[in-house]
View 1: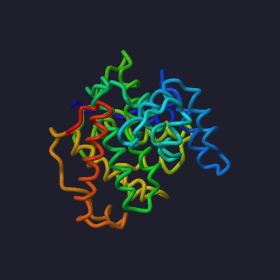
View 2: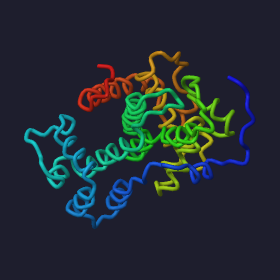
View 3: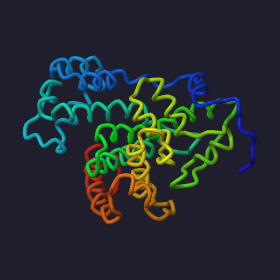
Length: 290
């Protein structure tokens, strides 16, 4: 790869601000998160918000009818779906549906098709949610951070694909992904860009900080545990979705200490994650490992 001088005057936030055709802000997801934080919210008020987006509504009903939520009879409305899955389940589904519109895109600058990108996002989200169950980290935040961990790739792909640039970013494999190539061009990489976009959209600071520090979680100023959950979950993501990559040893001891878990805990966590991912791959047609 030829060496180029990074564009030092650029920042992740300024790049996000000037990029054309950014994905739209996931307003339904952000509104649902706010409603769920309000103890006065009702199933009816949440269903009304979801119903405003026909694409997400369809996803919610389809997933509520999946074996993941164990229904013996089919639901046909958002209200029925919410009753079956519970409010936490509704948030998981809406997060999934919103992320599929944002992250599930072909990335020509990375030579990654939409299937592969979405597959990696789902694997990371399931791994993060499963790992959060072993810690004091909020499961919903972990799941969302996992789904959104690669959103910066979408922005950089739009920027790199400009006909005046035509850049490509090669992956160095786990744990660095494409960040060396991105930093050579720009001086920063997709985690910082993704964090800037999530900040612009109004996501919780905990999630945007975890995305920013997914490569070096112990450098996170406030939300180190969530950042560490995401960092370790990226390892599982690569283990399940990038068999061609040569994977290093499992996560660092300092990361495990940060979460208060033992290395021996990783085997059971991976088994649970693999099972959940296999079910998702089958039901959502991700083409994952069975």
